[in-house]
Length: 367
Image (cartoon, rainbow, N blue to C red):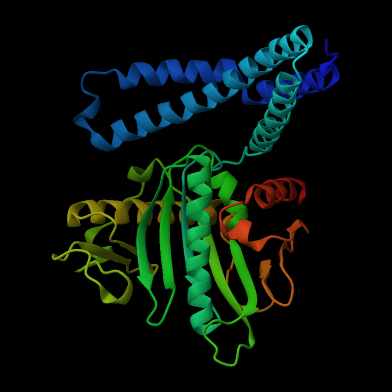
């Protein structure tokens, strides 16, 4: 018979879980789900497609939050049963399974604890991420594409719905820019700490002399506003250009002019979308992103939050927030939090949890 005793660790997890549950306010969350369920069940729900999408999306997000909470509670109860089984049967393999489950629950609670710090005005919203190549020529364009893949892999690992709205390919390699939409609960609050200038140091694959090259890319993260109807965009304030979607090397994706580029003339904001095959769908997606950016700009001006939410990202020397070093040594370091790892491959494969958690805690502690 085994004598596996994890009672102290489980008690500590339950204490942490109780604090998280209180912050999230499960009763309020349950009430919101009930109210949204009533709205989602209305027979005329889809008479207004945009409103219906907002309601169903909000309902899905809140149900996911509640499922996460109830799932942890159930796992803690099951863990205690598993420990009893291991001790009664004297089964070392079951004991190992219990220890692994304890570690897994600890990780999930740590992630959820970080989420409780996301209580900003926009933190619960979906996010729109824009990646732009900066100083560094071809290496910078290649770096921007590496960052695009990194964020797509991060979203894939976490099950976040994500779509690439637009990609502008560079002539030789990589991309000039890309826009992706992440439609997940707290996507903006989570990913907003990624905003800033990213710096790559490596032996350039585009340099025949094999010299070390430094390049930069800028990442902008804005919340995807749900109340986009509150922004009135007169038709004479925008210029709409349509063009044929294309991929790397000029390879045609569509045979019609379905891609859409919208320029907001008063502000100079440009939004492109070529993800959908329909010009109407691409225009709707581009307008949604434009409206979100304009609404954010309006709120920033009203509340003097521009620097906090967007900042001035120049993608060049002197203002980088993270360095990715591939030569002469291997390291990725966040210059704000000092969090670092020595495996850049994992980071570029979407392993960003440590950086994001450190960034959220740093932001919360920064006056």
